[in-house]
Length: 287
Image (cartoon, rainbow, N blue to C red):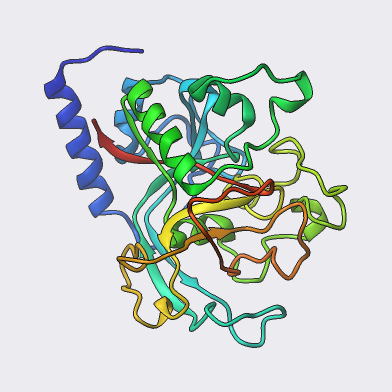
């Protein structure tokens, strides 16, 4: 890892915050032929990795510690939730409302078993298991992983908020799914009721894989069935208190009713399930 004076780190972190504050209201992908004209808010990442490039969709992606690959999604607004006429609609998914979220780096893939093992230790994996999503982990267990990963890397990894997750799932789409279900997701109709290697279905228009299907994904928010009625416009983080945490995306044991961008689920944060995993977000602040 490159070493730089602390003052320089602070300066670049400040540049990232200032650039984010001036970000445009809609995510505009940069042309893949534009060359490495890195956005100001991403300059700091070059201190810790030189593995930065534009993906085929035109968004910037980076490769970090333990093979973690992340995609930069610029700040912007989107319409969150689903209308009552959407097939599969459930209470809690409305009203549809406009939300603004800050720019983030989000995992290109769900966290894998190999990545979990590298941080938390444990028994060896068979070759065919390394790229499977890490599942059967509680929200509390994810916090232990995040604490260990932060300590090891010096970077502020966390779970996405529910709003961040939905924006990144939609990839600019306003429909129930971001593509034909069999092409983008492992679900009960094609999975054999087992998880599959991350990234083995088509990505969305941001270049992110498995936002629907394979395993459900924990979010950081407490669940509130009426939260959308009072959600702030800018960077909502969910209710201040609750008993159950949000999880999103559906999994390999579930059908299309659950595999929708707007579908909301909630689970006991102390309990794990074999179809419940997670994805990382990286804050722009340096520790």
